[in-house]
Image 1: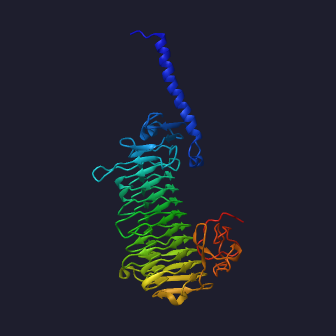
Image 2 (image 1 turned 180 degrees about the vertical axis):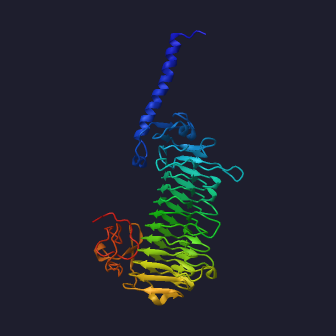
Image 3 (image 1 turned 90 degrees about the horizontal axis):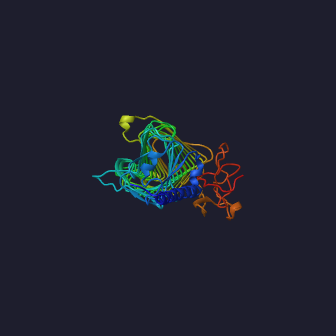
Length: 471
């Protein structure tokens, strides 16, 4: 067959025009990269995935397959489903996979059911924090582990996604297992379901997991704890600045093993469970600093509307506000030893400093605090309604200097209703909790003032909201 020169020119112009258009799209999309991506160095090429055919590939896995370390796979808006758009793998590559216009318009629809199981992403090839997943909605996954995302022996960065309406036996939203230490930040994890950990499940022996600045809400678990987050085992774990709210059946957060766990700056509110409302702690003693634990409640015969420590669980509580929680025993905090005949009187030590524990309720005993035999609780510089006389005490309570039994005078401010009344911020009276924390406590960035000026001088008691005006 002979092809004329005119035909060759037309062919060249046609396909050359397509490549020029693709290049123009690529340049435009690079300038329109999501803001969060600029936290990471974009070193390599940008591969465009567009299901309508306007990019380099039409499916997400094809884009990942073509990428090398340092590349960015940029996904155009659309609902991605079917083969190569679910059960996705980074294949151990240090790449960024991100949407071009955010999770609201870039959806991975797993279309999974009991007899046809799939999830969104599986990280199981040793990925590091340089493997970044950002900017997707992952919807309707159904699998054994990690309904939306499963990490096993991998430590990726998972940020700014929406994980909703997924199911898994371990981690309806995210499951973290093996030697994994991912960064999970800025995500919305909601309406997920799982017998163990409706939102997030963690069972890892690699130090360094960070779960920060997520909204974890309306998740469910079949069992009695961990509807928001269930930590079965972890080392050097940080849970910070999250909103954990309105989770059902198993409460907000359960920590049932591990060491060097720090829970800081979280708002754990309006969670409900059959055994615990806000936080369950067993077999370990984490540090809880500057958390708001409010409005959580137990349905049934449970202990600890706000916090339950049991089965060898203790803790170190600094600058927390524990308010408006309810349960059968220990409305605010309950320290209770189940199976004492097995554990014996082991003298678990607990410290409570600079906290406000107020307006909690219990059907039977321990409106604010319930201390069972086997616990040794030290309290200082804290405002506890009813004082020492209102603590149900079967163990040891060391009531030290600086404690109060005075209305903390909460007021409403920009971010909530647990600021402290202060004349310098425009109120007519000062809360007794202002400047009455431990004189030895180290100041941290945060505020109890409605004008959002950072706390200064002697640290105030209770939870501090983020400060916008710093000294």
